[in-house]
Image 1 (cartoon, rainbow, N blue to C red):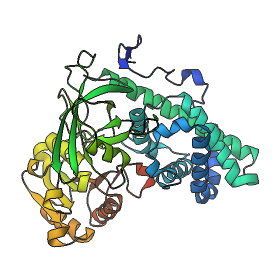
Image 2: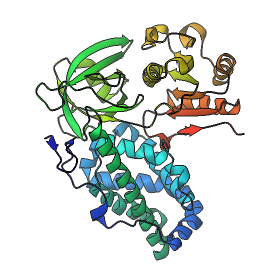
Image 3: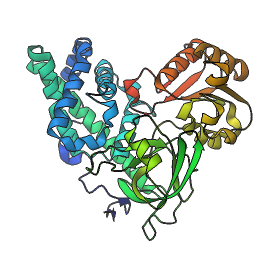
Image 4: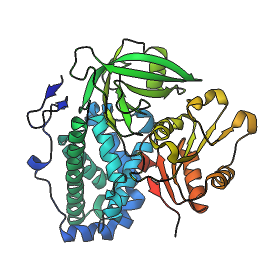
Length: 420
């Protein structure tokens, strides 16, 4: 049920205790804990994936309700994507423990994690459960190598990071609540329109229920952010929300996402085949860090497949700052929103011209647009990994990536620039 909090007069469905003040978490790390983590980071790193796989198996077995937060296609036993993301987070944290600033930059790893947690409705008490099972997994995997000193250091490290995240997430929840048309948690919305956009791609528009506190309001958010769609195709309440870039313009009185039907995709198949206008779904407010640079900077948009959706938002927001729009797809009929993109374009279709190598694509892109731009990239993980590496190798000044999933589980950086 949606209610108004007395503290912020904001709309929220998060009926939980918020903030970290009541949890007794460490506000800073002891110097000896920092030294211990720094000294053992290289030893822990080779075992990090085993630790996180053990963690997910154990915590989901004992707390099956947490399945509502994880797409099973990305987690054990089906995939190591989510365990790899957590493993990479642990290694990055321990390796940077003496200077956490690279992880705390705006739009960086911690920011992205906190935005995703807010999109899912994660709340502070759950961090205690994570700490318990993560430390148990460390003990299981590393055994007697975990001395009391090492255990104490990592325990304190996990709790300190929990406080950092909880405090950041509370600020994000409050930000979302204060925006025009804002709220936190999941709210009921009604499907107002469904359109075919391209082959196996549909857009879904949502409006608040008539008479609800959000009805008739425009929705403020930052271009490039995603909304989170919660449905229950199995009727068991355990289907995790799916995150889709908001393709509606900020300020509109509806929210829209665009979904590609994936082979074997439970949620994408359900919305394509069964969702209809008038149905009620649940949405969380827009979050995400893959957004335009705050400064007016020349931009190049590079996408592949359904990765075009953030580019719809960027093209609309950046206007004349966009020097070139690059898109790779199977065929023109698979290219969603093709007609929206005007101006200088570079389009590559495998059915008509064969597969274009990343090297050739980047070379042609830089020939047309130059190197001194922000290159925004979104598409399949392997394609992005190759393209961003090639861009940096050929001297692109700045590259920003978006991954449909946990970015720390991939080789794609949040942002990077060519070596000076």
